Amino acid sequence: MTASAPAALTAAAKVLDTEADRLRDVRRRLIRRADTVTWEGPAARRFQASIRRRERELDAVADDLHARAGWLRSAAQVAAPPRPAPASR
Image 1 (cartoon, one colour):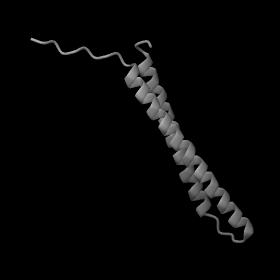
Image 2 (cartoon, helix red, strand yellow):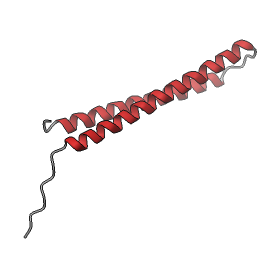
Image 3 (tube, rainbow, N blue to C red):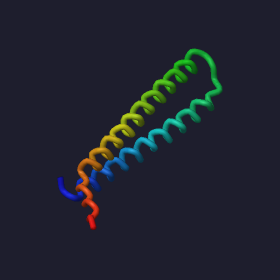
């Protein structure tokens, strides 16, 4: 790998973390929207169930993105050139 590979991997990890955080924000907005439902009945229950499914899906994708970002950070550490040993006197 080239010397810039660790930097590229770290940058890619940051992008994934940012996207995962954005999905968490979408989930929070979705919950706020669902909390505004004032109607009742079968349609409201189906809507609430649909919202819960979407919440789980968003959580799963965000968790996956954070995990992949962690893998990229680990790869960046492995790809980094070794540090020179301290000079002995």
